[in-house]
Image (cartoon, rainbow, N blue to C red):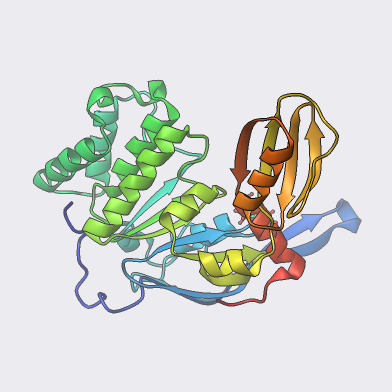
Length: 330
Ligand SMILES: Nc1ncnc2c1ncn2[C@@H]1O[C@H](COP(=O)(O)OP(=O)(O)OP(=O)(O)O)[C@@H](O)[C@H]1O
């Protein structure tokens, strides 16, 4: 894959540098004489750095401040505190210059034109970013192959499936060869196959073109497949910055063994597992011991039809983190 446009002079600098970043919103509440102003801190005193070539997950529960951070990084929202540089630029002041160096995809919205065939939408994007025709043709050919856009390039965007549209949006975000890709929930609502296509594509983009990627997601699969490093925010504040293994190891969130028995039975009693839920022949065991050992003990005493081991999802890990289970830092 063609490397992203290099930006001489910035190569050794962090791609993103946020120091004490904050964003307050002032809300007016009540009526007439009782009107009062209340300040909501969406993001508060957040400090982190992203280096060239990293893939970083930016995680947190609903309302934690992820979208507000993404909006500040892309220049849509002006910070009310702190220092922010993205590719050496101040996003809210230098939004147009920044736009030529970053690609942005918000999974819940499309930047494509609903009524136009995907190919025409992408041609408009080329004009918006003033991409030379030859560069556009080369990148479009590459992305068409990697994201398998061929069969639906002539289809109007409104008729695309969610997965096809996301592949179109990623193409639109990458046609100008940005060195940083910012993704807000890139796999939301996608089926397993589409998720996997997007993840493998992002890994290849990172490995071959050196593109730095910052993404928000609620999907642990995205995080596990893509991110060596995660930043977690809670109520606007930085709660963790480090490796995913460190996060998991620090948070005592049990794995769950889902057992399908041949028939409904009393709660299973087994060493290393506690039955936390039962529904007909299906039971959920929270594991405190080695999964293989628990599975063999269960199978020895019960007629088991099926077994599934469920890893804690990121919401579970993150909410355990907020209950104070792990110290800040990584
Ligand atoms: N324009 C706004 N005016 C007032 N409050 C806002 C505004 N935008 C965000 N907020 C508040 O800031 C906080 C952080 O919101 P934000 O959308 O950044 O969170 P989030 O982590 O992206 O959540 P989600 O995962 O639900 O998208 C929330 O309390 C939200 O209500």
